[in-house]
Length: 493
Image 1: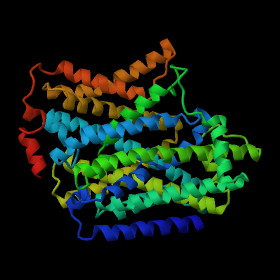
Image 2: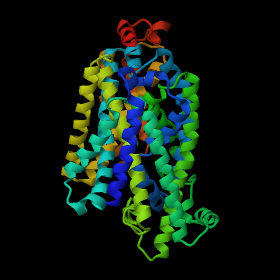
Image 3: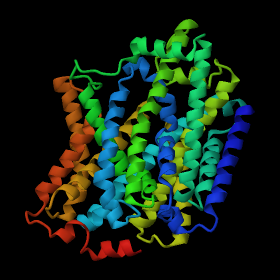
Image 4: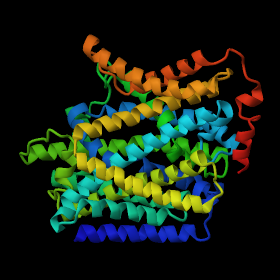
């Protein structure tokens, strides 16, 4: 009951913030907050938005399987954020985009635009639903099953809560609620670390030394090029993951485009990129402390690494205060990623599919429909109840971002035209070729693709568009969207 009361109190705080920020709100507030958000608030809120509930649970357990090598990818993230800030953001701000995929319409054509937006909708809806499903299952297992609450009620209630505080203010509300949720996540994380340190009978300085000298604290892998944890694979994968899953993701970029100026948006992205590294270092350090605590208490380390965090926090082994802190942290992480996904999907439906960004009634209906579809997706995953299915779905989500990388790279870094009618076929063929290459590499060369498959996918899309394109170069204005009547009308709307 304490956990349930904590969640309800937390939601009331979000609802109050929503009421403060969404009075007299309209579509401009919902989609881009009238481009008036303080960049410091956007940057701080982005930390929480990027730490999903799955991340909050899974990253500490990574130390049991891959040590702290995830930090290699986090280093690549920093370079990736600088690339987004100084390559993509200037384009988005110059064109004053609401949906970033509108760029594809002006540069490549209507079918390319529809293809890019469709890949985003499929990937974001599926990925966000899977992440939200995992969090719903955790709350169901450790809290609500004891009260015989049906899972459909749990899912519907949580999605309803998110819909309630985003339905009016949209992105204007999220800038402030995400900052509040980031604060809750970080405070909960630090206090859980203190609790684990105290349970070990250590001072904070002793805990730092223990973590630093533990074998699970290995960060760099240079000696095994076949390993998916090899430094160069992890580092460059981190760069491209940020470029694709931040710079080409409407969910994340929509918040950055609410800053007053390009310079403020660039400061926001760069500062957030540096903050992401210590946030994940804290999560991994907590994983090492929990592993040490399990050994101290004679507990077997779990085969499923996600169970490491759950056994000590949600399982109550560190006391009821830590359980409450864990509940706050995971709900904050869950809400901050799901609410922005719901808002971004609504924006993409209104702007990209229906191309009616000024229609407020359409926006309200789309917001409801996306919320309902969200619930349906989660219930389907629960019905199938297959871990292998979830892994396959998450892999599918990763494949959807490769074509976006290829399309934007082609538009930004070449002067060639495009045969627009061929683009959808190229974007479907590229992930299929990647899947075939992955299977062939496993069977013939004993090589396992990691995140570098994203780069391969993008390169195949780029090459496919290049090979099917006419050889003539476009004039400067057309390359930058200046002469497309349809593009100009969208910008005017």
